[in-house]
Length: 123
Image (cartoon, rainbow, N blue to C red; front, side):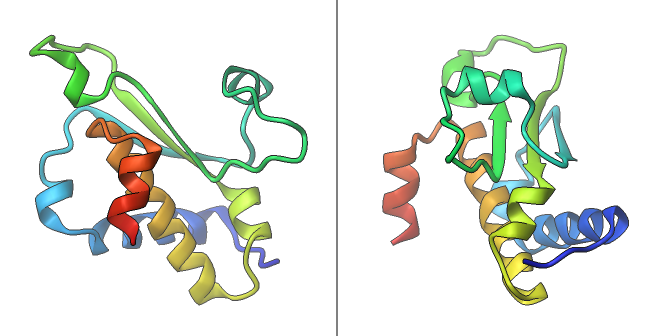
């Protein structure tokens, strides 16, 4: 496990976002990228997670592929969860990579990809 400050964690999120391919990040509109220490009980319940399951990130919103031109007023939300991410790694470089991977994964959900499609892209 590694432990870093909130400011450093936020900096790693910003670095991860800057490192992702521009063709994916330039088209993100009206999405708040946030972090919390842990998923809320409501988020865990909504996803039907057991006590032993970990959640690194969560996309909440209407994926682009399902909007059919509908305008949205509230932003979609991508939340990264600091504690599970820190507990999953041993070094700062591992944490940086896990944050980058999680952020990319949640952005893929924003574009409408499901876990199977994301898995195929990651191979």
